[in-house]
Amino acid sequence: MTTVNNFTDKISNEEAAQLPAIEFGGEIRIIDHERDIVEACKVLAAEPVIGFDTETRPSFRPGVSFRVSLLQLSTPTVCYLFRLNRIPLVKPILQLLEEKRILKIGADVGGDLRALHQIRHFREAGFIDLQTIAPQWGIEEKSLRKLSAIVLGQRVSKAQRLSNWEAATLTDKQQIYAATDAWVCTRIYEKLLRTPQKPLRS
Image (cartoon, rainbow, N blue to C red):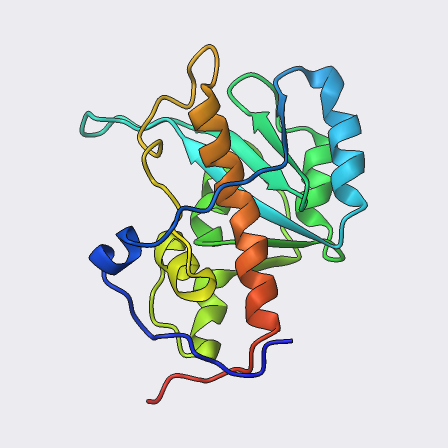
């Protein structure tokens, strides 16, 4: 049980880069066929807390943007990568996103939800944004990379962020990156809950 809040309020890019890397070590399941959606959602629905993130194919041309390519939902041991450029955003997935009983932990949740709303409308519930709650522990940083560095003392790699998320096959590096981004949110959240709060001084 953590009893002391030693979190720093800020950390530099250089300091974060010196930290050991953190990677999801569980099973990664790619969902790119509609037939696999229900079973994946059934596993996720049994969890009280899941990690949440999305990835979108980057655009390197002004005025050109793409719809969200990937939805990552992670338990402590399995991360599901829903390839939304291949499968529809169907009811079993929406039910997870609308279920307030299942906490979905992410960073910049609003941005991810806006991207998903461009595909289909739904009434999200049960979302917790690390960027919103971190100040309750005296943390001023917003990026997932820096939140992980401060709270876990480990670095989240951003090397694959601008890779092609609509590629025919996702590379192993892309899969680990995507899974880590969702899963690490739950690790940060759990560590925060075990640590006394320390609100920012106004």
